[in-house]
Each structure stands twice: as C-alpha cells, then as structure tokens.
Length: 104
Image (cartoon, rainbow, N blue to C red; front, side, top):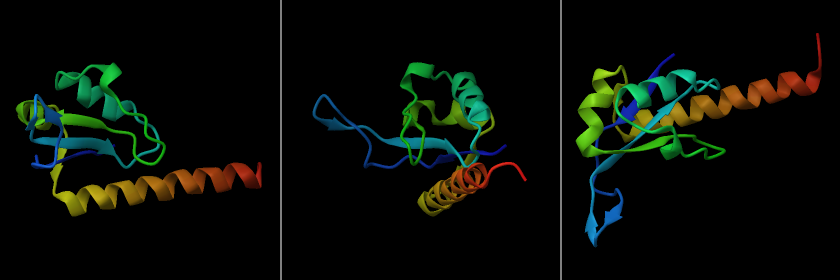
C-alpha cells in the first residue's frame, strides 16, 4: 500500500515566530496500517497523527523528511498529494456505498 510524502514547503508551521518547512505524510488507502508503520519507522509518534476525516495524515518537519523516505514513503509534489487525497475519498465513498447496499 503506497504512502506518500510531499516535498517540504515553506507554508508549514509557525514555531517561535518563525516558519518551519514541513510536509504531509498520507496514504490513499482506507486502511492506515502502512501509514502508521512508515511514520513510526521514520521516528514519528502515533500521538502526532492527525485523524482528519477527509485526509488523515502526519505533519512532517523537513528534518525528518529523509528518514520518512528511507522508511518507504513515495515522494510527490503538491499535485501528487492532492491526487492521493482524492483517491482515498473515492475509496471511502465506495466502501460506504457498498455498506449501504448491504450484503450482495
């Protein structure tokens, strides 16, 4: 299951009145097991996970970027990240539709 990390950008967090370069780490899969595995392998703590209903993700400081890529994340630009979010939305919607239809 692919897990994607966008290249660090300047729009990241503000820390001590200074912008910190950061990226987002997310998966296009409904099952987030691989996302959590790669995040942990890259030095992230589970409590840093942001369970956003539309795009569950981790915010990654630029200083952790290389370790996350080494753990198996696929590097993408902003467009690639948006495409992954759309694929996940579609997968979640398909599962909800299937559940609403009931057993076959």
